[in-house]
Amino acid sequence: MAGRMFARRVPIGVVSMLVCCSVASADPTEKDVVASLDVHQACQHSGHLAAACAGIDKLLTPRGPMYQQTLATPEKLPINELGVVYAKAMQLQRYAALLVIHAEPAGVDYQMRAQSHLKTVRAAFEAARTTERGKRQSDLARQRLDQQLPAIQKLGKELEALVAKSQWSAAEAKYLKGIDSLNPLLGWMPANATRKYLAPLAIASKIDAALRPVRIEAAKQQLTAAIQAIAPDVGSLATDMETAVREVGASGTCTIDGKPMSGPEAILVLVNRWHAMSVACARCRAIEWAAMTVGLRFPVPAGYGDERGETEDPGGRWLVAIDETRAYMHASLAQLIEADAQRVSADEALALYRNYIDAIAQASLQLPPDDRYLIFNTALDSLVAKTGDAAATISGERAASRELLRWRRRVADAEAVRRQNEYVPLSRAFRKQTAEEGSYHGFVPPLGTPQNSPRLRGPLTETMPESVSRLIGQNVSTVSARPLSAEGVQFVSRYDNETFATVRASVDLEPFAESLRQDLRLSPDQVPWSWDAIAALNSTHRRDGGYGQHFVAMGGPIRAIRIRSMITGIAANPAIGNHLDCGEVPVRGPMDDFELGRVMLDCEIDARWVQHEYFVADVPEE
Image (tube, rainbow, N blue to C red; front, side, top):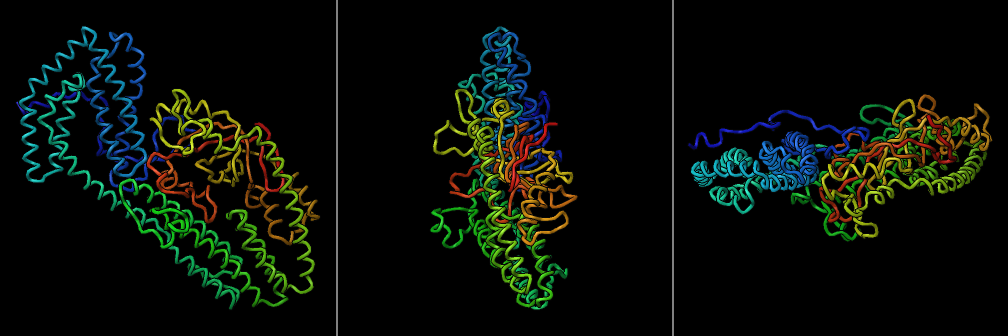
């Protein structure tokens, strides 16, 4: 009877999509190295779908090796569960496809996992059918399908009736309920024997064809809304910057966000705002990149394609916003200092100069190194000129310290280069160690291939175990790093070519700071007259005595890794701002190289040495 046709179901770890879930970010030290990618959840139900996929995959993953080990002795196969495992793998494949429609990178991984599970269980079915017990099970499945054929045919007609009324969602729900109950039996059938039972349900392809564009359109709308929700107000930063220049030039103070402040205080606030805007632009670009995979397009800024040689880049407007803001902030921060210098008297100029270099020394640590000097050095000249008799002394010390620091930087760079013979740059190690080789698919094609952007080339369940063994223990070096913890033992490296890291290092830099003070000819209680010398000294102290230790590079062995999506690793990673300087975007380049499966490496490193901008220090092993 039709009413009893799908009544018998074997619940094996049933996962409800109605259960509220949260797919949280995990750090590289988590034990589950084969966890899938994070989800950005811009689309409704993405979190539920990802949780459903994770639950099914957790159920199926341990069965794969067990089945493969018993293929040579099929009598040992647990044939009673094969049908339900097959049905669950088909469910996983379906949910993963929906995640891909939602522009979720995890969907790509789960699709690959589903294909792997299906390949394994189909091989298990084939092996099982060579045994007497398996033959009986296969014959029983065929008999039950034959008995239910009238009900299957009736279901097909019911689906056709719903389709005729354009009741697509109801038709899909009815079809899925039926096919989920049939799959445990269909799994036992050879591929050429299933047509008889599936032909009455052929209208399912029409249902999918009707609902797919509806789902894609809904995803586009939700992705667009997600971008709008986090899009920064670039214009407000420019307005506040313009107001600050005007008001500081008139009175020495300005009001930002309702708070009165001096010019030096405004520099700190506005640089922080600039950094927050840069991070928000990077997140928007990442979500637009995801949206591109479902066909969403955005206006390309005028001239963008011509200037950069790209014809289509849906995230290009955020690059333009970042680049234009960078140029504007360069000019405006300098104008702020110059405006303050013009209004100040000689008696006030010296104290004001001191306040500015203290603020600049702190703000500079959020800027790319080259930007620091371009913005501030010339602007400060106008303020130095107003200091009267002190101008010559300040100018002389600034010039002397600049030359000394330049020399020390060259020495430190040379020492770091020597060490990098043993400590490979992290981005290079990632590509080298995870390049395809033999049966290992890795994350990049074989070495020497022109297109080597890291991406999913197989399910993480299969790729990660060997990737871990290849990367753990590798001696690597990072690019610049800033403090993460208040106690100054954890640092985060700047994003660099699909890699970033958390680094552990506990090192006393006081002897190096004292050496630097001596070279600068400073007494213990004397403060330098140049902002870069102040920054150099303060960045040797932990946070209780300065801005926290900052490093140009750090080197040591990898102790934990995690693969992140290039999309959700930016859009959904709450810590991504720690890895970016003002005006930086993790991804530039032609968008045709961007796809849902692109990945990056997040790892944890135990430092053996650190490179401060002006010296290199060894880290004692704990």
